[in-house]
Image 1 (cartoon, helix red, strand yellow):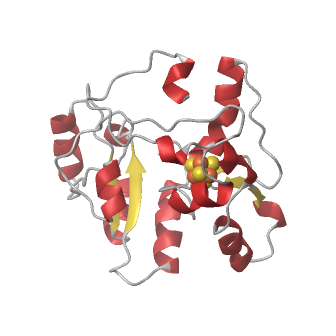
Image 2 (cartoon, helix red, strand yellow):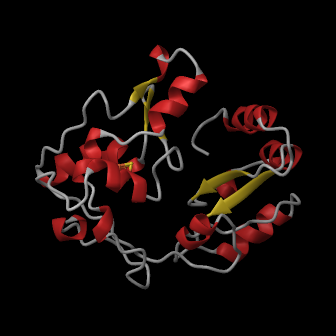
Length: 209
Ligand code: SF4
């Protein structure tokens, strides 16, 4: 919702997938829902978009629900569990999880096995940043980790696609269906889906290793 062209995204997505049984979901932390105006919600309804916030604590969800419902839109809350099962829910609150990294790149799994067992691979959670399509948020955001913890986990030119050099859609699909060099840093076998109640980071590297 930071993107001023978000309504176009709704329209283009639905035009590409006109079958109404294809679920197009806006996943959001919900922070900007109260700032949206009538044209946003009209586009949500016109294009059959599911608005799916992650239910973080310390937000007035009753107020947000009432606001969006005044435009005829019902929220469907997103949770990791629901995402994996392919459904959406309206009751689950966000929990904390752990996606550990191996700083030396020596995971117990090969990059192929990590990628095959990864819930966010294969286009499920691609991230666009500065004209590059990253297969996941971990690779797209690892520079923050490197800067903060003085690390140097490398992102190579094989860990993203330059969208301005892509010839066609098939090329993108083939790219995101394969493991990436960075996957060797990702300890998929050590992931913990739920550490219980959501809590803020202590900014210690142990949360990531
Ligand atoms: S680096 Fe590879 S294994 Fe890790 S989250 Fe991204 S796609 Fe999945």
